[in-house]
Every structure is written in C-alpha cells, then in structure tokens.
Image 1 (cartoon, one colour):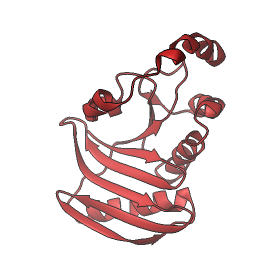
Image 2: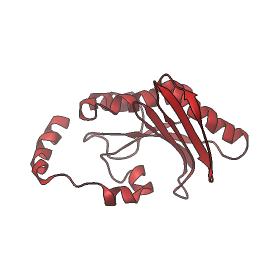
Image 3: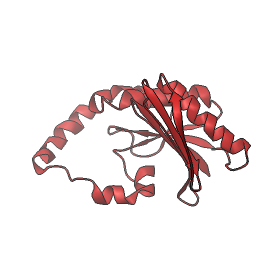
Image 4: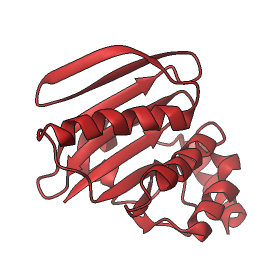
Length: 181
C-alpha cells in the first residue's frame, strides 16, 4: 500500500510517498519558507529537483506538493497514494496509535495544542487542507507520543539517538497525565 505521509510545520511541509509493504520511501518532497521566500525540493529514485516557489500559506504549499506528486503519477514514474498519513505531535492519553481522522480527532488535537503550541496548529491545518484537496482519500493521524508509530517503524535510529528525559522531570509525568485526562 502506498501512503502519502505529511509532516506540516509552521514554515514547511515534508512529504513522503511510502510503500508500507516494503517499508521504504519511494518519493519525497520538501517545501520550505512557507510565508516567505519559498523553496521546493522533490524527487524519487535518486533524481532531485529544486526550485524557488511562491508559497504564501500552508494550503498553497500542500497544493504544490500534490502538483509535483501528480506529475510523477501522470508520467508513470509513481503510483498514487491510497491514504494520507499526518504526523501529529501529541495524542494525549486518548490516541495511542494510527487513528482515522474525524471531527472528534481534530477537536482533541486542537485541545492538546497547549502541549505542542508551535506545531499543532500547522499539523491541524495540514489535515484540514488535505481533507479539502484529497477528499477521496482516508486521512490518518499518527502521534509522536504513541508507540509503535509510523515514525518509529520507518526511522528506528530516531529512538536510538534521541535524548532521554531528564531525571528531574520524571516525577512530573503523573501531573501531566492528570492534566491530559
């Protein structure tokens, strides 16, 4: 199965077309400088294209990602995705794995924004833009706070290299759980 994985940030979108049967990325795209001097880089199988891009907002950046993806599909170099997977910073205690996005999921992501204030607004905007631009595809959220996630499975070195939580913060986890419930 091919899925389009989106990581929407406040000034960038990272996208990958991933073959989940083979656990490998077959195409990738980066739109940086959203809201300023934009830049587009994308490619597949060792071929990379880079150019300046006019991307005044997140939705225009996602339109650009989908445009270059469609070019690859129409040329026969790529097949189309069967779902869109969104990286989300925090799922609270409610979401522990891949979750089909509906209105309740979006409300919970919004509710948890104080825990991930720099990222959740853009991630939620990415979901809503993808729903408008790809209404025929299921939208799935995966959460950085749940394991195993798409990210952990595709990037095992992430877990091996990330910093451990400082020992003095461990006692605060109980309070964090109370706040989230």
